[in-house]
Length: 206
Image (cartoon, rainbow, N blue to C red):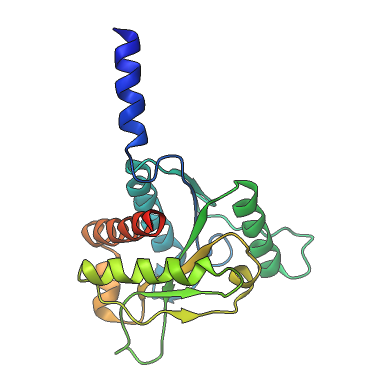
């Protein structure tokens, strides 16, 4: 009986679309670095909320998921001459140390014109897989009827120095009233995370 149950469990595990895929989630900012803000609403807090929901959705599909941070901290040290660069370098080291198949960096956008809204995926050409991942994620967001902007390239430090495939996901504009409302709701965080998870599954399937 034990052997039978073990075999069934093993088969079911291997049928999960992200079985044993290692995915690192980087909730942007944290600690002394709040990111962008709207009044008392801080980007770093929403980034972490969305990242934890995304972790759950990815694990449900069989992935091994690591959060670079699971609380309000940054990774700079008092000895760092450039605090932000030290923080980012240690995030890169974390991604690489976990032998990640991909990483997903979670952030929020801001623009002086409050009209601008929607999610946005950015990538760097350091790895040819980055653009493919960005395209699958964008397509999945659109399929789930989530307002999404065109994909773009970025030369920001973390993304131009990480050889592991990955992208920057701007989940919405904190400067846009509609985005700001949605980003704070559990329902939208769930919907957004499910769409990202579907995009990740599509990427690995193809």
